[in-house]
Image (tube, rainbow, N blue to C red; front, side, top):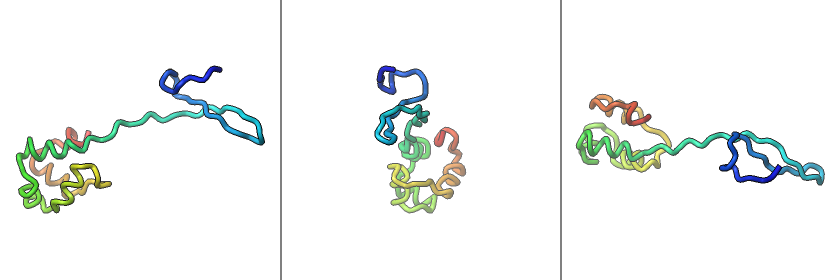
Length: 100
């Protein structure tokens, strides 16, 4: 079998070389399709366009610190606080549109 790049193949398997007691062989390895990264800019767009709130106004109304809001919008926070999501829902924002 000739070596092709993974992008050229139509199946979801790749072949990787392995070494076993001095011999070289190939084994079939199933690949997992990569999900496209989550777009954290959605949160900033919701805050600015739908709610029309600045950082200061958003933090005063929601009770979340300005630093946390900035970290969420930049995608540097590993989780989204429940209070943040509850505030968006209370303001009438469709969370399926934001998170989906």
